[in-house]
Length: 98
Image 1 (cartoon, one colour):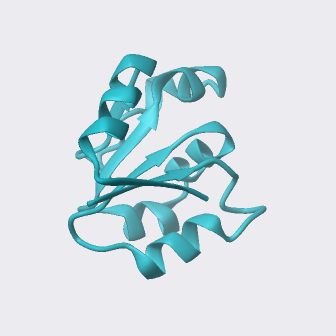
Image 2 (cartoon, rainbow, N blue to C red; image 1 turned 90 degrees about the vertical axis):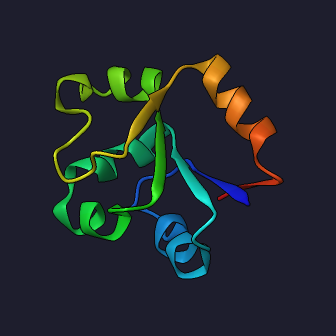
C-alpha cells in the first residue's frame, strides 16, 4: 500500500502519467502543489476516477479551485489539511514522491 505524492503540473511533467502506469489497486494518490490543476481536466479526471485520491486543501485554495471541489467526476476525492496529510503518510506502508 503506497501513497504516491504528485507535486508537479501534469501539463509540464510526466510524473502523474508515469505514476498511473505503475499504481496498484491498493495505492493512493495525493495531489499537491501545481498537480492539483489536473483535477480540472477531463482527461485526467477520467484516468483518476475510482482511485483513492487526495488533494491538499491549501493548494486547492491557493489556486482558486475550492468552489470546484470535489468534482462530480471524482466523488471519491478528499481534500486534506496538513494533519490529515501526515496521517495518510503514516497509514501507508510506503510513500513515493514524484
